[in-house]
Image (cartoon, rainbow over all chains, first blue to last red; front, side, top):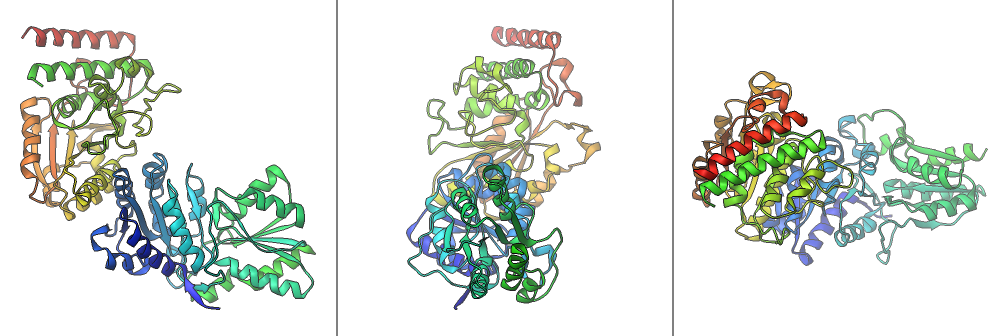
Length: 309
Length: 280
């Protein structure tokens, strides 16, 4: 399967969007090469504003630009967009509900060698707590590109997390992305695996392996973390009885807790959360690190079997 | 506006600050009063806005970066016709469109939601940059407090404004010398403010923030600097609590509302000042 990093998808989609949408402007904080906004910068230098290494100001500038009728796409690493500038996002974009798209790359453990200081496993939690914030996490290249177009059409603040490492492209070009809709990728009745981001291909691989052992696993791609698709979760609970969530994020505050909240209030169902436990990351090659943290199909298979007993 | 009209507007703004914070039993009169003359000149004479059409696309913009001085801004907006003056008494009450700190989606005439210090100036930079990109002759005004200058983001934004040559941005600083915990020079010395902004690439002028000729000089300096590629900074030398004797130069009046007796005394002082202006 072809592999593409979703940050590359973002860069390409943004440059494409720039061609048809004259009101799109892009901001970055000295990371255009890494976030891939550099592709847009090359095509539209007059619409690209580098803020230098000042993420808090970047968020405020984006807010101001949006009040002038422009649609800013503001980019830096997830650690700095959601973490360092959290309060700026909350107060100058979230509170006034401004039409800014915060596109953060380098989310999660797969940042790799840079280590814990740059491996943001808290962004879903931080962004989900802001009232009115839409939180998205694409699972492959196709979804990431379609998501950019959807985020532009959507009026309001949006946070999107992209990955650094190249990951499998499993959607075909006919795939249609819709904000707020989970995607049923594979039906199953013994267990439902709800995954987001680059963990989705891992969940699909796990389901294939489980099928060989006569375990029928449903797989759901939850690309919208907020507002979350309650129906697809509740349907899974009714049909499958047990649910596993998988995310490249802390098990605190992310997909797992969002799914648990829906289930606890509507249809109590046993859940096992797979993600980064309450600990910091560390340095290493991305693929090895993901295995180290159990963010891989092998661990999903083991956890599912343990869960089903 | 004539000098007399400006003076009367400033007195009405001060009256609104006292009445609204008294009704709310909280709020920030000290810095609202020190900025009252700036507010009066800005909305009485300087800024291109239309109270009947608050969202007019090509209006100038104002961002109150020191958002806690909302009572001063609200009293100004009410007195120039954005909403009824009587509504000032709903300040900070449940259901009011006059929140404790400015909310752009609730209050006519408020261009940006602010309140968390250091952030308003960044949004003003975004507006100024946007106006330049769109080729619109819009001026963007923002007001900061001198205590606010301790926030690192102020200097990020100033660096940005100079880097992008935002000469359509007019940054005013209300230098009243006091903040919550005491004198700014004791809490966190921000001086020398002029040299700091100059070093960051701004054109800086210092004026008496309670003298309309001086404030006018500050704005003329801003307009003269347009086209020269530098953001303008107007340093307003002011007195915290200006116009109400017992509030003047008292850090304690930063964030405290007057009680009934204090309101009566304050209003009596403002009425006396009004009489002098009217008879002059």
